[in-house]
Length: 162
Image (cartoon, rainbow, N blue to C red):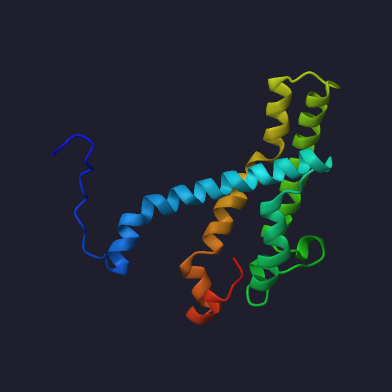
C-alpha cells in the first residue's frame, strides 16, 4: 500500500430487521440518553432566557396526555374527589408538593437567601422519597403486560399516547 492511500472497508451484507435491532441497540440507548440530555438542556435554557420556572415535564405529560387516555378503561388512572382519586394520581399530588418544597429551598440557596445545608436538603428529599419510589415501582407494574391486557387489546395498546 502506498503512502497516502486509503484502505477500503469491505462491503458487508445487508442486515435483516431483527439483526439491525440487535446491532443498533447501543445506538438506540445512547440516543435515548442524549435526547433526555437535550430535553433537559432545552428546559433549563428556556427558563434562563425567559426568567420563568420550568414545569415538571414528566408529570405534566402523564397527567395531561397519558393518564386521561388510560383512565378510559383503567380505574388506576381515574380522577375522583379526595380519597376517590386513583392512588397513582394521589401520589402525583404528594410528589408535586415534595418537588415544590425541594425546588423552593434550592432557589433560596441559589439566590443567597439561605446557605445550602445538606442536612436540610436531606430532610426536604426525605419528605417525599417514599411516595416517589413507591409510585415509580407501582406505575411501571400497573403499565406491565399482565395488567394492561386486562383492559386493552394489542391494537388499542399501539394507539395509547406515550
